[in-house]
Length: 510
Image 1 (cartoon, rainbow, N blue to C red):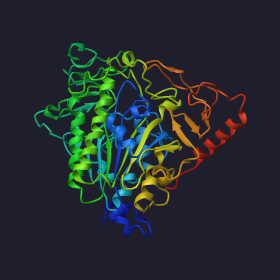
Image 2: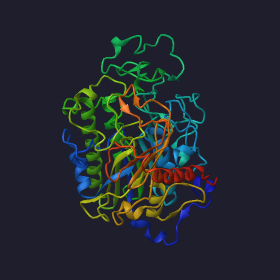
Image 3: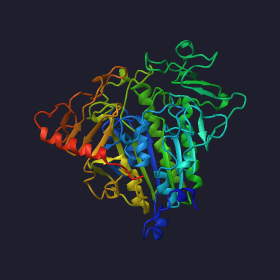
């Protein structure tokens, strides 16, 4: 018996699903990092071309109103994997590189859905959900005591947090890949290690990217780039930023090849387009938008390599591939890469207002493409309202798994919408800003609850959407939240506020 079935005794296939086992597709959930709604040419971008992604969209279904649950990474990913709104759980804010596992072994996950249905499961790429059982007490020189294996993933190859945070090593099956015993690893988010240079004190060592003032990327220097947090050691295990995408591709293709005869689920998270943006040599200088544009090209290349591998392995026809992003875009997020200067007429957020961190729509409005040649008709575009909170509920329906009582509390089954068979989608989506303030979206209206904070985030120049009084926008008339209708349509605002408060007060069964 799978150890997770002991923890969740009601995990199992729904009635009638066992006979369909051989027909169920492989599933790849391929997620970019900080990729905006308007960053792909199939979503209207003209200053950058993404032919591989465009081809997948043309041969599948492209959604125009999909939303991440949060406008930052850690809470968004928490909700994607658990089907629980991040606002319900403390400790789901942006995680440090030495945070403990945020999803605990006792919680049901998306990986459990697939594992219980007989799938091999993998998490590859950016993680940013903590590792180890105690924050700040990981022994990076030994096998970690709590990893994605404890929440349903058979295999993992991960960046512990993000590329701008230490430790700057990959973790494979609980251990540092290419561990160098001559350079033992120490990590601290409190103080530097004696004799170790920093970006603040040794800017001459920032040979690849300079840090923007006051963003915090001026601690330890790895690969000529300043990071958040302090790290000592690593040796040959340290990554080179320009090799990160190729490393993720190689491990992904290897996992697919090893499991081509069996159904598999791969949670594949690239580092692009997150800072520090320093793609492989073959992409640098290829975009008029500088390193951020080059990183978008690298992401498109990654998607193309995954698609090509599916074809060469003969499993493309019955593989369901999702392409999306964890949250919205940001230009200047801590490094002097000229993203804000070279953006030109490009609109990373598309028609939406705001960006990463924001309560406005561009913080959570993300690309969402579903491709499954055996099932989905080509060339569809859907304006259905979609939320990434529904991963667990929708994929459980796909593979015929019954979710245990009280698990994935907020996740709904929208399989018919994701397959393009139902154009309606959700009645509402909930969005969480960096402040942990909430918004409530229907197809027509957007309600933003009162939030404390500055209306403009000083470091990134992003409009936050924070206002001490409630806001109401008619999204059905204009996607850009330009006219606050709270005073004139208080009846609508109060109805949405009541629905949001009722949702907030619901208590998941444990």
